[in-house]
Each structure stands twice: as C-alpha cells, then as structure tokens.
Length: 219
Image 1 (cartoon, helix red, strand yellow):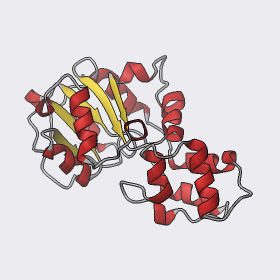
Image 2 (tube, rainbow, N blue to C red; image 1 turned 90 degrees about the vertical axis):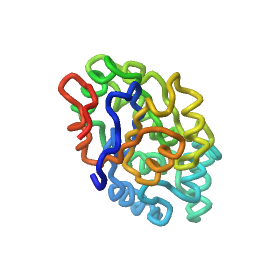
Image 3 (cartoon, rainbow, N blue to C red; image 1 turned 90 degrees about the horizontal axis):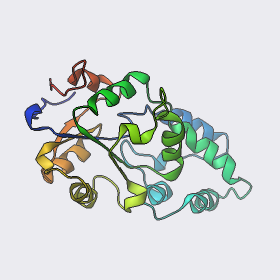
C-alpha cells in the first residue's frame, strides 16, 4: 500500500468492495492479445482504472452489448467481426476470483453488511455472476447485500454522483462504510462524500487487514 490506513475499524459496519483488481484478477495484456488477433488495438481505450471511448460508453450504460459490438466494428473498420468474436476477446480481460477471497467475503458477511461497487459492463458482470461467485454452493446473493454497477446506475467512478447513489442506497452513514478499491482517485472521491476508504493492491494483499473470523482489523 502506498499510504497509511486512516480508518477506524470500530466504526466500520459495512464493507463496499470494488470488483476488478480487488476481488477478480485482471489481465489486460491477455485481452489486448485477443483483440490483436482480431486486428484491433484496444490499448488506447483501456486506462489504469477507467476506460474511455466506446468502452466507457459500455460501462456507463450508454451502450448495450450489441451496440458495444457495433461500435467496435465501426470504430476499427472491422465489419466482418461477429458479436461473438468481439465478446470472446473482451472476456479475456477477467481471470478469476481466488477462493481465499471468496472465503473471506463469506466470513466477513457474518459481521458486516457487504456491498459491491464496480465500473463494469453486462459481459463482465455476467462472468462474475455465473462463474466467479459460484463457490461451494454459494452464489452472488450469498456474498453481497447490495450491488452497485456503473452500467446500471448510468455513471462511473470516480464521479461523485455514483458515490451519492451508493450513500442513498445503503442503510448506513457514509462514515460507517469502508470502501476498498485499487484506485487512489476513486478512494479520494469516496472520502470526499464521507466514506472511509482504503486503497488496496491488486494481488489480494488486502486480506491481511482481516482476522481469521473475517473482522476488519486494519494495519
């Protein structure tokens, strides 16, 4: 971590998790290679923590899945590509949610209200719902009490509006909610609305901030 945790564990009653880079491991290079094989250079559109252009439109709900594929075809002058070819390449962005993170979520849910806040799109969330959060007989509702997805809310992090929507959708004061995200910009935006926030690394190191029973203990 690049900063000292400025969080009061005793005040935390709810946990708000990012999806990509915190729970699910990402592989941008694998995604780039898959699109390279289609004759598409997607690199200029994928940022460190937020997408741009047609990808941002997809993740903010301005474009549905077919419109996303159509925009890819027109943007890159590749009319021969089918939706299936494009979506198969796009799925390569996500790898997996390691089982130790899933076990931690289940333990933490005994102590906290758990929610998810993600800049994502219908394709990637379908993978999460149908593949990554199916574990030991559990499914998405067993891990999260609320789910806040950018493409459903019509706005992406770090916009204050998305955090306002989360604030209004949770039965807790912002100061009782701990937000875990790998983007310093997103964490700063959350703090500006009164949330507690921790910037975490992408390798699952955040697990060390919880004890064996799933209680957040801080550093």
